[in-house]
Length: 96
Image (cartoon, rainbow, N blue to C red):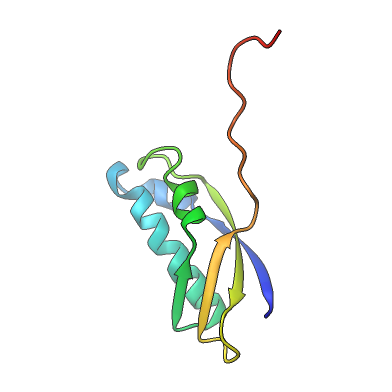
């Protein structure tokens, strides 16, 4: 099974209305992977969904790094997951 990494630019989604941005980001990621891998079925991992919705529905990240693996030998079904694991941001405040 081959794996490739794509960095998907989502900054164009900021032109749409705020309440639609995250759901359009998910649809855009699915269509991007489908277009670049020539797959018929794209399975998105839950890590992508959690990352896109991590900053609320109106502020999706500007870029997403996605790792794509082919699930069948013909390449008709692919699975996309988050390529770079995301750590929670450090807490504000003093650490003594």
